[in-house]
Length: 204
Image (tube, rainbow, N blue to C red; front, side, top):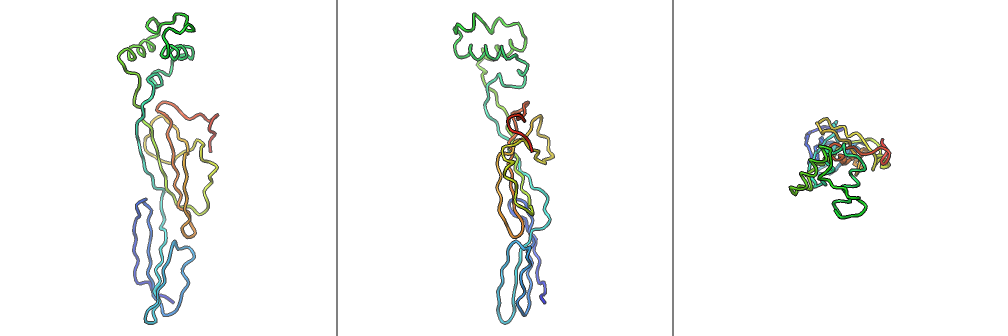
């Protein structure tokens, strides 16, 4: 029989909570099978056993939002441009004298949205800063994670406001600790105002 002499609870840098239990006895006692780690020492006839357990842990989230420069015509404001206009715009940007344009001139386009695009272009505004969201979620699980879901559209479980985007599971790492697995999943948000296409990526 052993006696608990000390209990310590701590939180590691990833946000997971562990409980460390120190016990003493006069004879060897096997460590608990579900402990994360343990250490046993013996001195002066007393056996000291230090066991570390994971406490009940909710998912731990981290959020990283950065921006990337994207072509101005890819801004959601211009999502209504027709495929023909986009094709002509692309050719005109590369070579305004391209014979394939048949005299097409963006300055003479009658659509107000397209006129605004041309106005920005004339002012030298050819790109815009698009926010991209990365969410990481660390959990404790009782079985090996399913790596086949990497590369698929997935819900993150994150309850904060991320705008009109969906997420792709882009990374997964796992480490077994005792009888549990510490699993970190990384999700990449689609560009603002767009979504990852299920026909290309599938979903969980």
